[in-house]
Image (cartoon, rainbow, N blue to C red):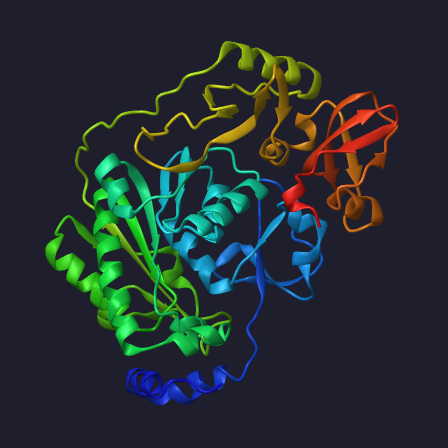
Length: 434
């Protein structure tokens, strides 16, 4: 791989005697990894070989797990190992309100959800990427997540100091991904690095306005560029004395390198088994935040009644419907802020649609259920013909009572079917069929 000369010159000056080892790492293949989704799975798939040292839920793998039916069921999320360090650094506690400010495609949001926040807002400013983000939130069976498509500044104006944890994995020049993405090498320039640094400083300002007193920002990039990393943090701290650098659980991990001037941590490919990354946690001083407005919830009684009738026949657990938006019914997070003026794709868990007097369950509801949460299930073996046929949209033989049926794969929810006369009609969404 031919790296940009200006990049090599800067890294040589930064790393000194380590530079040759750093350069040699680009001749080595990237290490693929995945993260177990504890919302749906209790164990790693058989393809996993070794745990990622800085993430208890992460493991390196061999083979092609992305082609498995278990991947479609949300049992795991394929993620670059160094990127897993961001949520580890966040050290999220159950019940906290978490905002992932630049969230697509969803690796950090789906990771954060495993720690049971009371509210997770996953935001992405680019509409097409926000759609992909929503699909990954759905696949991983996440309940209390709002997916928004807005600028960080708009969210800060709207919500103010609301979140206990704000993750700002900002767009960057991508130097840490040169080994994985040749397009990052071709698009690199000093001018682009400067533009990224300016944009990221603006995102960090919005993150500060969204962080509750006593809360924290986790700022991260996948670049080695000082201008986008330590310099952004240093300038921010000069004008924000309510924030200070905070220790992280990553500090004790072998191979992590303290950032320039002691700011944050750098992950280098020649010192650990992953790509390049920068992570820094900023703690906000305690104080009192103004109370914001809550989500305005309205329901259609007829629609709720139809959902409750469906629930009696199909579900063992009680799920409350507290919002009807258009023809879609939702169960929303209790801590959800006001969404008026904010474009959103998802608010909590979509339960289904009510049209022409009929309720149809949503695919998201199936993926969020456990096998024990449904009255009737059809369990298939992962990657054998029946499970693959289901993903293709085919009907399946089913010796079951007529009615809605949760299709599972190795005990993990995959989608809906409807048993009728010994046949399971397939309700796997057409847009997801293989």
